[in-house]
View 1 (tube, rainbow, N blue to C red):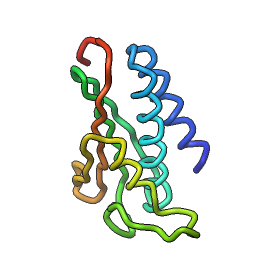
View 2 (view 1 turned 90 degrees about the vertical axis):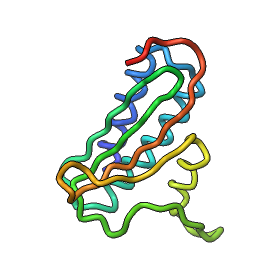
View 3 (view 1 turned 135 degrees about the vertical axis):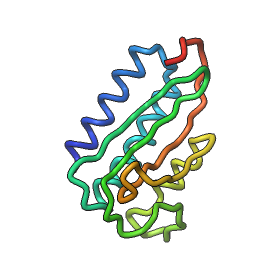
Amino acid sequence: MSASVCKARRRVLTLLSEWGVDERCRADAELVVSELFTNAVRHTDSVKVTCEIRLTGQRLRLEVADQGCAETEPRARFSGIDEEGGRGLMLVGALAEEWGVRPDETGRGQVVWACLRRSGRTAAR
């Protein structure tokens, strides 16, 4: 699992650097992709998890799609002080302007998405 999450994070950072996205937005995107991708790998039976990113004006949209069989729909929850996990979607919610979940095209999987605000000027993609 950690290799696939690391690979996704590295690909996103490389592309955002090529697009000239500012350092803060890249750092936020790295955390968001890590959390969403980790959740998709850990909490579904998916063989394939995909990540799509789009840059439109000052907004960066990240989408992570799984093939389904999720134990539960993603939602932010409060974790106890001694718990190791359970803070990922709270972190996503704190970093993103907005985020949500929608069914994938098949109706079996789901897409978890988040929109981040960036600074600087880059052409829309």
